[in-house]
Image 1 (spheres, rainbow, N blue to C red):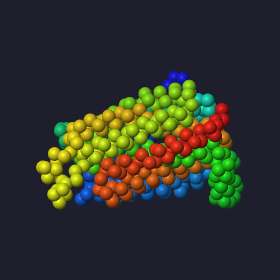
Image 2 (cartoon, rainbow, N blue to C red):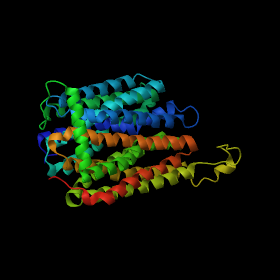
Image 3 (cartoon, rainbow, N blue to C red):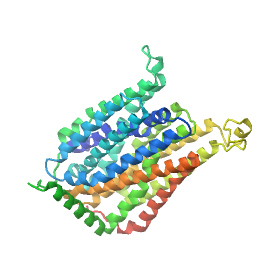
Image 4 (tube, rainbow, N blue to C red):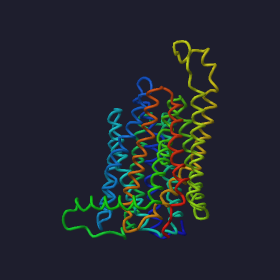
Length: 443
């Protein structure tokens, strides 16, 4: 970190701050808790989790360009950032007091919305804190610090509470352990947001119009949309991003729900996700170095290929566990259980292997994508452009979870759901392969 200036370090530290939310609320602790508490019969928990993700993504996708346009005005960006941060933290405090799955889902949708809205502003600050030559490095270090700090330390504390809390002198049982994990996420997010609040400022902005600010904002949105549509390279990249980041987000958000659906142990799954966080830190930095030396688009294509392999292996893992019983579909029928390809122990090893592979590409593909986009847009309109970037990211987050939930509800087979995610990766890679000759960087 000594090679970064104060603004760059403060910007990077916000990834450390908000990554606790990504791990505990999106990837690990909360999804498992929600699926278990709302499970009922069959796949109800996973289906509603997928629907909740899709609803949250849809609302933010509609609001993202409006947020992006508003934060271009001098004096607005920081105030909105503080507002989203405060509302997100308050939503987590609300979640920590609930045990109804319906209220948990509503609280999650709101907390996710405010967290994601704040990240639009955070991403747009990238052009305020560094130069285009350094974006790959700074962006990669943001994800790296998020993984090693925000994703790991609160995660480990949560694991200890959940797995060993009942043995404490004052016992902490499962629901209370999850509630304390949510509170820890809120406190961690707030405390480590202080550097960006103090040291990062909006440098490239527009004067706020004296009247008709709403009308002017929508004019700016339309103007930015026209500029994107006329820039062939930028348009191709953002379409490709729409598809492949959908797959990335679905893998992150549905991994533990998928494991729970297959009956894998909570402790084993959480341990595997810890592996993901630890591996992701060095590989995020490694991706930043690769992007400095090689074509960033080729780096993205390579990461997509790894994700396709991950989905295929995940399908094999799930299909090998699922039983289609010939005796009136009695799942615990001993003669049909023998037809399984392997047991849960082997499946858990596969899950850990997949967690390691995800860690090698998860941070890198996101950091490289953010830097590629940042290098293609003008700094004076970073908020508006990142608002559209978030549109594609959020609408992408609708397709994958919706596919997963729909196929699971139609077939009852989680393995087919994970296999369907390959489609979005293939579409994203195809667009990148077609359009990489048009993608130009402004350095």
